[in-house]
Image (cartoon, rainbow, N blue to C red; front, side):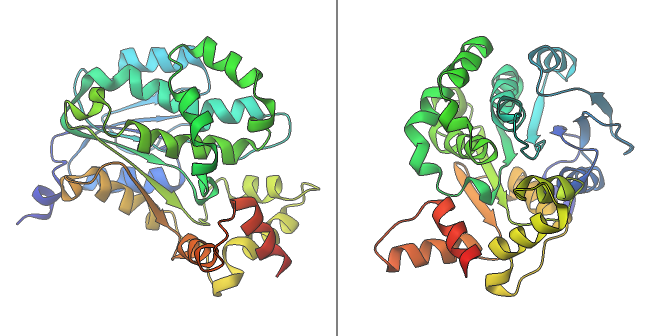
Length: 295
């Protein structure tokens, strides 16, 4: 079988956000190689030979709605890969970019996604422990209006104070909650997410700085290494080690896969889960991270 036939992207309309850099750029390059008609979105210029590119701020309701009017009438695969790190005072902005804007765009485009199409998100190992906030996340997921969702955020400052983590937990809750909802399952639209471990991208410096209590890049890098790499003598991933699996999951190769949260972290979160199960004491991501730092 021809490899392009196996993936099933040849001549298909594929929308991908965050395509200017990092994991999404790697995914975009592979999609182009596989013959897809790629419609790429980013807040920064995109220099790849895509079918069309769109400069949009996906934290803004107006930009998201405008983008929806400009994308093709039929979409075979949707990859929402954009995201930002968290800095103090940016809690609501992080929610808009990393979760609610993605949900909002997904649902605006849902009628255009073809039968047996796919929707694949980039979440994060930072969303590990999403079950702890599942009820709150589902409450938010069921809010249809952008303005009502913003009011909900204003009324839940404690939840969004852990801004990056909560947004990713909501994204993972969305996949599990919606994968068999009638609006998806009636058209057999698959819904999945990858959860990358530590990966070198254009956001690495932002993540390092935001992780440090003092905003020091080197201190933040050391903290991240202690949490995600030190325990297994590990190394950070390259963007393509996330972008390529993303393309596989959205392709015909995984045509029977839906509702899955795929952790691509060299087994790190599985080791966390194993530890908590053996201790008969499930732990939150915060508790596990703190233990790792302390050790």
